Structures are given as C-alpha cells and as structure tokens.
Length: 418
Ligand SMILES: Cc1cc2nc3c(=O)[nH]c(=O)nc-3n(C[C@H](O)[C@H](O)[C@H](O)COP(=O)(O)OP(=O)(O)OC[C@H]3O[C@@H](n4cnc5c(N)ncnc54)[C@H](O)[C@@H]3O)c2cc1C
Image 1 (tube, rainbow, N blue to C red):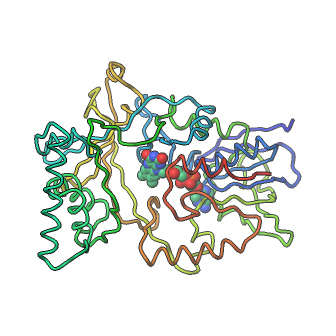
Image 2 (image 1 turned 60 degrees about the horizontal axis):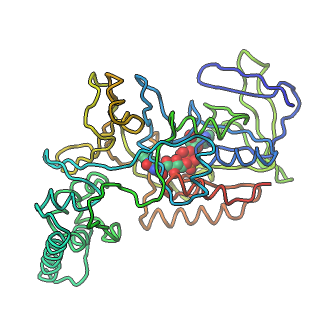
C-alpha cells in the first residue's frame, strides 16, 4: 500500500505520497464538485490513481456546507437533492444516508403567504376557492381574459414572458407570484424577456405542496460534506490550487504533465507529475484562454446572518415575489436537517438572503445564459473541446449547461472509466 503524509498550511490541504520520483496518475481531476468527486470515486473503485485539485479552499464545489452555530449552511446556495432514478438514489445513499426533507417552498407577496408549486392551497389563498372544479373554472376564466387582452393588442401568440405567463396561468397568479420574482431573477422586465423562458406552468388540482414530482428527495444526514468526504475517501486531493497555476501541458504522447504545487515548509518545493487523462470541470472558455470571447452567467449574492431565535420563518425556503423587496428568497438552513421539536434544540438560526445579479469577473459563475450569443460561443468552444484527446470535459461549468445534482451523478455513473 502506498504511504501518504498530510500537510495543512495556509488554505492548502495537501495529501501526497512520500517518495520523490515523478508522480504518475491515471487521472488529474480539476474540480472537486459532484462531477469530479463522483468520477474520482468510480475511478478509485476501478483501481485507478487520481489526483483531485480544486482552486477553492475546500472540497465539494457548490454543494459545500459550512457549519455555523452547529447548522450546516449551504454556502453556494440551497441544495435539495431530488431524483426519480433509483440507481442514482441508491448510489448516493450507499455513500451517506439521506433524510426525509421535502421541498415545500412558500411565497411571500406583500406580507401574504402562498404555497408553491401552484396547487389547491395556492388557489384557495388567491381566490378563496375550495374545490378543484371551482379552481379550474377560475383558471379557465383568467386564461381566456389573457388571450382576449393579447388579441385586442393585435397578437396571436405571446410576444414576451409576461403574455406567455398570463396565457398559461392568468393575471392574478402572474402578478402575485411570477412577475416580481422573475424580474429580480433576470434583472429585466417580463415584457422584455422572451416567451420561451416559460414553456409550461404546471398546476396541481390537489392539496400538495411538495415542489418536486420526483420519487426521491432529501438532504444527506450530517450535510453534503459527508457525501463529498465519502466520495473522495482515499483519493489524493489538493485544495487552494488553480489548474492554470500548475503549468499543465499535454505532451506528444497525449499525457498531461504538470507541477505539483510547492509544499512550503514540508518539502523542498515543486514536484513533477503526469496524468494519462485530464478530467476538467472548470469553466469551458477559460480552458481555451477565452480565445473566442467570454461566456456570461447569472449569479447570486448571499447575505448570511445568525439570528438569536430558534425558528425565524418556519420553513427552509421562502420566496419574496414582489419587485420592491430586493432579494428573491430567504433560506433558513436549519430546516433542511431538523424537523418538528428538534428545530428548538438549537436556540439560534442562520438565514441567507439571496440577491440575483449579473455576473462579473471574480464572482461565482452560477447559471449559464441561454441567449443566442452565449449559445453560439459555447458551441464554438464545445467543437474545439471535441477535437482534444485524453480530456473529459464534465459538469456544469465545462459543459456550460445547468444541471441539477442527480443528472450529474447519473452521467458519471453511466461513463466507462478504465
Ligand atoms: C445557486 C445554485 C443552487 C442549486 N440548487 C440545486 C438544488 O437545489 N438541487 C440540485 O439538484 N441542484 C442544484 N444546483 C446545481 C448543482 O449545484 C450542480 O448540479 C452541481 O454542483 C454540479 O457539480 P459540478 O461538479 O459540475 O460543479 P461545481 O460544484 O461547481 O464544481 C466545480 C469545481 O471546480 C472547481 N474549479 C473550477 N475551475 C477550477 C480551476 N481552474 N482549478 C481548480 N479548480 C477549479 C471549482 O472551484 C468547483 O469546486 C444548484 C446550483 C446553483 C448554482
């Protein structure tokens, strides 16, 4: 068995073999998010040697949680795992057991609360209707009014998101629960957003506040770090190291040569290393030196606060749907993992207000922008990526595509790793 030593200094956490020859890896994995970590897990199971590096000071990518007052805070935004894929569900539960958290967000519009997704509870709160037949009649009436308004204005098809939403759900629900929230999310008026952004607005004619239709959902018991730790157990990892700082070059043989970061105070400097295959989960345009231009993103800014009360809003997720409230949501993290009376076992709570903003250099790139310019640019980079050998471009950043967590894991479980 290979001996390993561990050094912890500054924000680097390095776990490296002790001998001094050129280090040889099967895989150099850039990024320790769910794609990189799941890939490393499977490669290790296949007897491969992997090195995982991450530029952040911690492992886990966007699912990383920080413990604040004993509460797991979702630092990069609230993450709720959901899937109908039994193989994926069994896989994640084989690493760490998941709890029974069910996402049932509430919307606050001008101080009144509405259940999401749109269901009989919502219709009762908006119109006072108590039966599915009454709710259906109200929806039909509101939709017909929206179509008539649009036609009176000379249009046969919705010309923007506002018209599209009103045709699908009517004016009352659009005004209270969609308009302000969507405008804050996109930073633009709904009348200036394309109709295709909202293709469907599902409604439930039953009293069911469970946001997802999936068969399985939950949060890892003990938090997402347990999932990442389980996936990366026994894998060599280096945090606080940017891929673009290790001089990684592809040799004529197709192998990747790079310099291990210097281990100040621990060894006499940098060490040479090589890997047969590179697994890259960073930004696609950055990999190619932005040669065609920069891809754009939407991002979210979080304001996180510890409160001296055990239960601030009674729910993990509350959306603020009016335009005048600058944030889109307040997340109360403890509700992801404590239920019923256990909520009161901790006298404090942690909340995060989410502000949706335009991405600029230095900010976290969260959501790809699916407009024509960015789709074309991403296509150019993807074509270039397809010409390369011994590289896997995977995950949300390297594919420039929004993925939920489960599809990322499903993708990696479906890959041939040898
Ligand atoms: C705000 C938000 C909320 C979300 N909520 C949910 C949810 O509720 N449910 C759900 O299923 N999904 C959710 N997702 C999606 C989920 O976060 C992704 O599916 C998942 O994180 C993708 O994993 P990944 O490995 O592709 O990316 P990431 O987790 O982003 O990992 C990529 C890693 O690569 C590292 N990296 C990048 N460049 C370099 C470099 N040059 N050198 C070294 N390291 C580098 C980064 O530091 C990062 O750690 C949400 C996403 C966002 C943005």
